[in-house]
Every structure is written in C-alpha cells, then in structure tokens.
Amino acid sequence: MISAIVAVVIFVVVIALIVIFAREPGPAPTDIAIAYEQAWDRLDFDTLWTLAGPELRDGLDKQEYIAAKKRAYEGRHELRNLAEHVEIDEAQVGIGHAAVRTRVTLRDGAVVRNDVVLTKRSASWVVTGYQLVANPPQTV
Image (cartoon, rainbow, N blue to C red; front, side):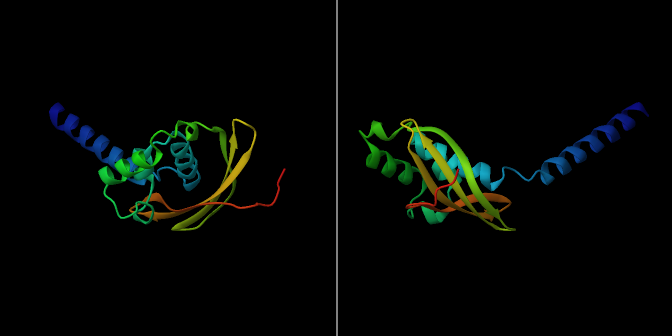
C-alpha cells in the first residue's frame, strides 16, 4: 500500500514539474537582444549562431559560420571587449515579433545604438535583423 502511495506522489510531482517547465516562457526579447550585443562584443560566434535565426547565418551551418566569422575577425583583437555597458533604449514587443533598440556605452565613453529585430519561433525568440542606428535622436 505504501509503495502505491509513493508511486502516485512521484507521478504527481513529475507531472507538476513537466507542466511548470512547459509553461516557462524563457528569456524575453530584450534579454536576447542584450545577450546578442554582448556576444558581438566578445566575438563569441557560437553564441551569435545560437541566438540568430537563419536570416543572419549567411546560409552556413554552425561550423561553417563560426569558421567564417573567425577568419573575418582574425587578428582584430581591438574589436573585442569594447562595451562598458549594454542597455535597452526602447522595445516594442508583439505576439511573435519584437523591435528592440539597444544602447551600447563603449569603454571610451562613446555610445552606439543598434536596432535588433526578433521573431518568436518554436517558443523561443531569435534575432532576425540587426543594424546600426545612424544618427539616432539624442535622449537623456
């Protein structure tokens, strides 16, 4: 009798955990945008691949993408770790699409803003567009 009760309790706990994890929404699009900026700052091409949709992968598989990016940035150590701080300037989040403007404060004090477009696919947000904002309006 006790073993049947233990089995039922274990079954209920397992089902409860499955339901809890299935309902977890995952990272917000703003979190993905910040992670994407930070990955670019570290030249972390593995993370960039993971966060990006096919639109930003240049038609390459993961190994080809990482190898191509490493070749492109080889010897360009001055382009790594430039960001002091990354934050969100503004975000518009819809049901399956998001537009996020990031504000990257560089170590030299300069500020760069980027528009990051995200699309929700398979219950996860992926970056599907990324572009430097030229001459953004000044905000305080």
